[in-house]
Length: 96
Image: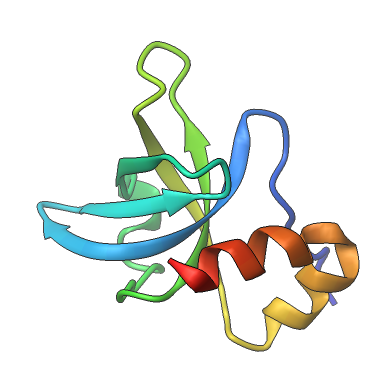
């Protein structure tokens, strides 16, 4: 069984709001910011995103309004995220 992925340093939990095309999505992050995030090349074939999906966004240091989607959570992973201390963030994102 593989290690469960949680947001690390410089990363945050987000929820996909809109698909923009050209491997970009609009994501609302746990800090309340709406960011345009791109899907890096190594993830493009693995990540099929749709509005409502929960993702990990690596925020860019040089432009905090943008980032990269580095992981997608399945619906069944949300319970594990809640157990690991992200319940408040998930509840806030669900209201948006």
